Amino acid sequence: MRAFENFDLKQYNGYKVSAHCRRAFLPESEEEVIDIVRSNPDILFLGSGHNIILSQSFYDRDFMIFNGNLNAVAVDSAKGILEVEAGALMADASLFALENKLSGIEVFFDIPSSLGGAVVMNAGASGEEIKDVLLKVRYLDLDSLNVYELECDAIGFEYRNSFFQKNPRNIVLKAWLKLQPADYNVIKEKMDRVKAGRWAKQPRDYPNCGSVFKRPEGRFVGPMLDELNLKGFGIGGARVSEKHSGFIVNFDNAKGEDILNLIREIQKRVFDRFQVLLEVEQRII
Ligand SMILES: Cc1cc2nc3c(=O)[nH]c(=O)nc-3n(C[C@H](O)[C@H](O)[C@H](O)COP(=O)(O)OP(=O)(O)OC[C@H]3O[C@@H](n4cnc5c(N)ncnc54)[C@H](O)[C@@H]3O)c2cc1C
Image 1 (tube, rainbow, N blue to C red):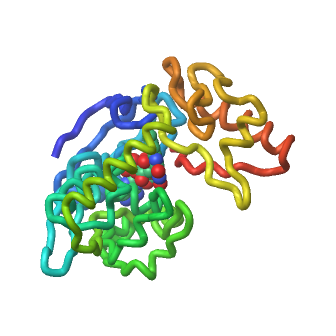
Image 2 (image 1 turned 45 degrees about the vertical axis):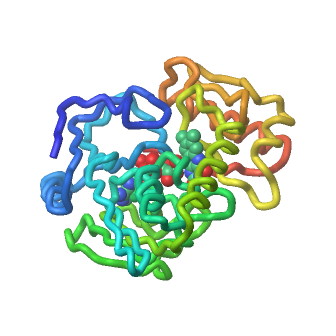
Image 3 (image 1 turned 180 degrees about the horizontal axis):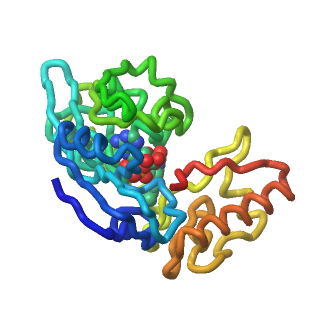
């Protein structure tokens, strides 16, 4: 396990916002996770940090980070089942699936995410979501320190939502994904095609955390913001992306506060014009 004091989370959040915390722990095993939680019951959790807004410049709290640590990925080839630990990056898991000629998580090749974050957010793209391939999740109840396993049907997945988001005192440790055998080149072609399509549309030149808002019923966020001429509109160092107005980028040393102020201003303008209340997808910590 790695542990740090007065730790800057800048390299651990997609927006690359500078925010220090009292201590940061990067555990390597389930036992280490439980030990850390036992002595830090109010610890905060980060996956790869690509769907969070760090609202404070200093947290007088500890963070546990699952970002490339606690990252084992194993395969049961006969059953087509991938066993993935919470801190494994989905890009790595999808490459591992490719090497094992297993299809089902190609879209995750280009979604910056840990396995845990993908489960909590029910991440997905192009009509595919993690819930479509998820068999079960192993998790830790932070209050009892008991470890449980939950089948996919019991996780209450919704659009960008899950049992774990609604019950943040339960921490994803590991999940099992059911994939399908397929030809290596077919899997690879899909991974590359999806990635190229996304890079053509999304800002990759400035730090960001993907779509800021959930898609409202019957509307699309981008066109509403375009109609309001919000492309390029900024507050402090945060700016609505010129390339895709559903994204906010850290244009110039943004603080979490700049991002939140920009979000509030967008919500206000969209509501005034369209009477639509945009719900924030990103998790504010
Ligand atoms: C360029 C770009 C493109 C993106 N495109 C997409 C897309 O197409 N589809 C999509 O769905 N998302 C997309 N996103 C958003 C992001 O990639 C996903 O939401 C991703 O699943 C977040 O995972 P994470 O590990 O970074 O989670 P984090 O941002 O670290 O955490 C998200 C939430 O989960 C909690 N959490 C993290 N790990 C655990 C755990 N093990 N147990 C319990 N709670 C935990 C955190 O406390 C936080 O509340 C994009 C982001 C970027 C930057």
